[in-house]
Image (cartoon, rainbow, N blue to C red; front, side, top):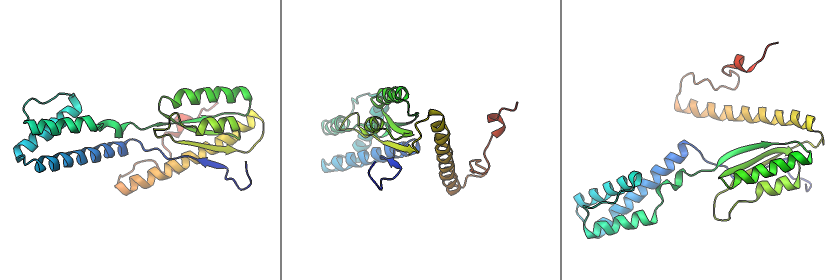
Length: 212
C-alpha cells in the first residue's frame, strides 16, 4: 500500500432494521402529501381525497385496484402506483464479514463467496492480510445503479494462517466492544432499564465457556 495509507479501509455504511421502517413511513407520508396536493389542484372534495388515500393504502399491501373513484381520482391513483415503489426503502443490503488467511486456496474460496453473495444483495467486509485480489473483489460493485457497501480491515502481514487467526480474533473483539458501546448509548438514550448490553457486563457468559 502507498505510504501513509491507513490500515482500515471502509466503504459506505449500511442502514438496517428500524431505520428502514422509518424510511418507508417517511416515503409513504410524502406520497400521501402529493396525493392531497394534486387532488386539491383538481378541486376534488375531502371525501374524494380520503377515498384516494384509502385506495393507495390498500394497494400498497394487497395490490387491489379501486373501483369507486372518479375519473380524476383514478388518474391520481394510477400516477402514484405507477411512479412509486413503496417498499424500495426496505430493501437494504445485508452485511457479511469474511475472515481469511493468506494461503492462496483460502483467498480464492473467499473471493468465490464474495461474488456469490454480492449479487444477492450483500455488502462485503473483509478481515485479512493485504491482498490485491481480495481488495479488488471487495470494492467492485455488482452494478453501477445500486447501492453497495464494502470494507477491508488489513491485518499485520505474517504469511501464516495460524497467526492470522489470532490477529483477526483481536479485530473481532474490538468490533464486538464498539457495537456493544453503541447499542448501550442508544438504549440508554431511549431510557431502557437493565437492557444488559453494557460491554463490561456481558450476559450468558457461562454458556459460551467450556470447562474441562
